[in-house]
Amino acid sequence: MVGYPNDQGNPAGAIPVRVTNGSGGGGGPPASATPKGFQQIAAATLATATTLTVPAGATSAVVQAETGDVRWRDDAVAPTGTVGVILYGGGQSMYLSGSMTAIQFIASSGAAPILNVSYYA
Image 1 (cartoon, rainbow, N blue to C red):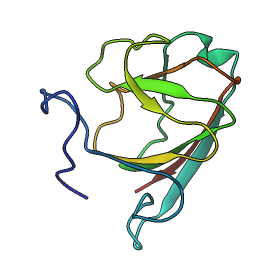
Image 2 (tube, helix red, strand yellow; image 1 turned 120 degrees about the vertical axis):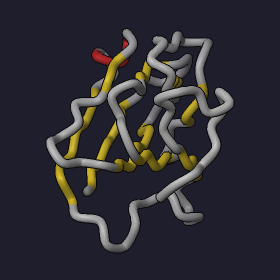
Image 3 (tube, rainbow, N blue to C red; image 1 turned 135 degrees about the vertical axis):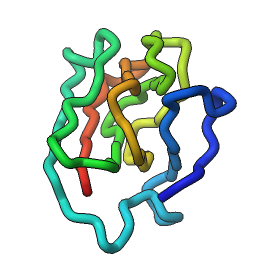
Image 4 (cartoon, one colour; image 1 turned 60 degrees about the horizontal axis):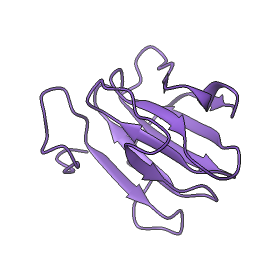
């Protein structure tokens, strides 16, 4: 997928992002995507800014916030608990494509979050 705008005016290295509420709306990978792996990031890890562990060959991912809110930034700057784009817990998901090395996540206020990430090629 190409060309989803992001909040930072599309700086160099930014990745296309689509955020959905988990109830449809195209928050998943293309139908032809090949699964490459799964990662679950616990609340204790999300207490500080955390990058993804992207499997070799993965070019996209679906990221879901479970139980608590997280914040993210994709401009290689660490988010904080109050600064960054919010991904609400309880099933909101986002679709990433392209390079995923710059994006970082951190727990926001509220319930302890769990981040579920499915990777695709």
